[in-house]
Image (cartoon, rainbow, N blue to C red):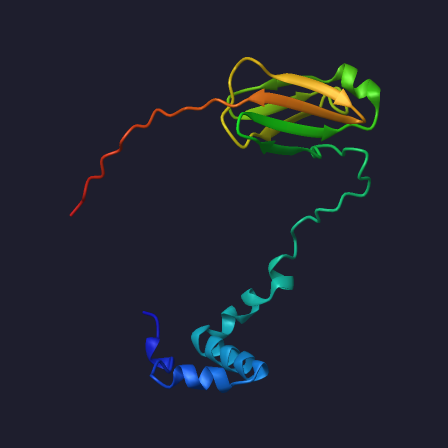
Length: 160
């Protein structure tokens, strides 16, 4: 049960908050949080401790794709889904293979022959009509969107 009785919700609350200085508000919020949170949970609220152990998003070589990570951008317009992949060397374009399903783009043999990357597309796409172009060290895949307006209603049953 949430301890609602520790909050001073009264008619004078608005006047009290408008007259408080920012540091007083900060102290007030910290005091309230200290009363609500148990002592063993206070370390969870520290962002530096929360994100320890997560890998850094900065790669050591931004131009050279590392194993398992593909530096790609996927976005949609009204009619198409675009995926852009920066490619440093032109010979990599000749060896890679691109496939797609209705919601994924699969890139194989890039940058190494045994690599395989899967990119989740932001929208459902059609089976036919995809094109890929390479210009200025950027591979751009353009896939037409599939507009699926078939809705199925789901009945909700109430369990007593």
